[in-house]
Image (tube, rainbow, N blue to C red; front, side, top):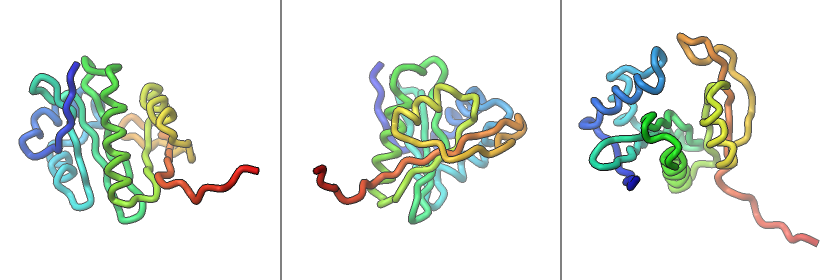
Length: 156
């Protein structure tokens, strides 16, 4: 599968809304929330496109210090093709370009594929947020990845 990354815009709202409902069910963002997100201040959203169709999307928010993964999703028929990692790498690159100190995120405790993606990318678990995801009332792990290494130290 050939996948190209591109910025998301208002013309993508139909595809985003459909994918959001497929991936997140009752917890999906509304069309209004998606529109606010993709054009909001400090936000950066990217889509993964294959054969002219949106197959994945991801977004981050930057507050001037840390970047936060706002969402990352891949259409079910395009999962396990490396698209999630491609999108995450794009978010990490953008966060570094912006000068973010670290990348933060929250992920459902029962979303093992996402947890594995983030662990492999070097994120560490910080803590547990009880009943974070509504209306499902599911807990979430908070995770962080430092984006800038400190000064090199000599090994003796």
